[in-house]
Length: 78
Image (tube, rainbow, N blue to C red; front, side, top):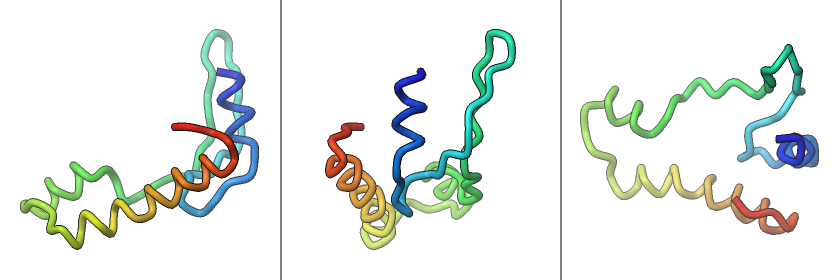
């Protein structure tokens, strides 16, 4: 887990959730991360009650692909 924390400490892009710190309490490791209020894609589907359109899927995939591109450009794979 420590190597993941070191990766999280490195530079970020706006499509990657920000890392604020890590705290160890006894045998538990706590990570302080940016809060994402939007929820998951399945939450979105459940709230709207309909399947996503191709345009909605594209609007979700674009920032995900930008984040993967950023990680790959820094020699990281996800």
